Amino acid sequence: MVTAGPSDAGAWPRDKGEGLVILTSLVDRADGFFDAEGNRQSGGYFHKDELAAYIEYGATDRVTLVGRFAWQTVEQLSGGQLDTATGFSASELGVRIHAWRAGPWLVSGQASYFLPGEGENVTNQPLGQGDGAVDLRLLFGRALPRDGFLDIQLAHRQRDGAFLDEWRLDASLGMAINTDWQAMVQTYSVWNAEPAQPGFPEFDQHKVQLSVLRQVGELEYQLGVIFTPTGRNALDERAAVLSIWRRF
View 1 (cartoon, rainbow, N blue to C red):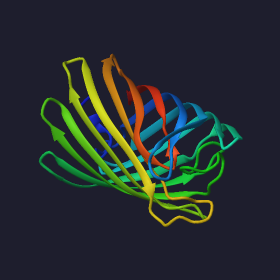
View 2 (cartoon, rainbow, N blue to C red):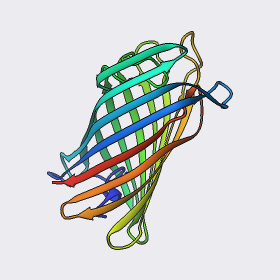
View 3 (tube, rainbow, N blue to C red):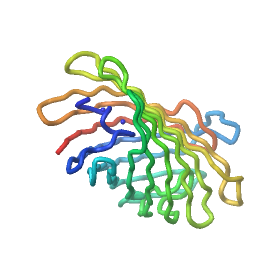
View 4 (cartoon, rainbow, N blue to C red):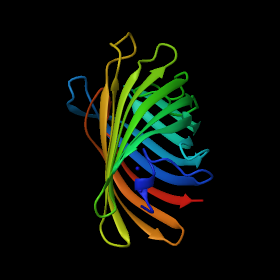
């Protein structure tokens, strides 16, 4: 995700007894979607306001505990049907294990379980639907010059019930602008890992997040925007995000 910043998240482990909390406020909107051929279409709308907490804690120098919890207010109109929800989305509990390091390179593995909530649980499905899911991922990190970093994560998310399993690919590139500011480019991609089933169409969605970060005392503030350049059977989302990082 940031040397006093995102380069000590992602694939990088926490030292024993040390932790990280990231509080994020998100405003997400869509007034269109990508159809089955990947073409942008207008119609309906999607409104989401979210407050999320992401937590890491070093159980040992090689084992990091992770969790994410998000409270949402979501309203979606699609095909003339209005869908609303207020409550927690799927909550993540996981463990990350540092596996290998050589020079600037680092590799970790992570296993997480997702507990369903009242809000978004499954990509491209009605709010509140979805059972649990197991997410297994490999994380690759590389330190770069100028306090920069590269973090790449490849995951397979196996869903309980009839919902389609997913492949996920997340990537983050960060670089210091000066002694006070850092810039990040992040991408988040998801696509189905199983053939379509009745009521469960194939899909993919690819998001880009551009953000800047500034350290102020013990806190680090991140301000960014998110957009969706391409997708298939997915929303065309745009969002603004404000995060506060705190290490302890």
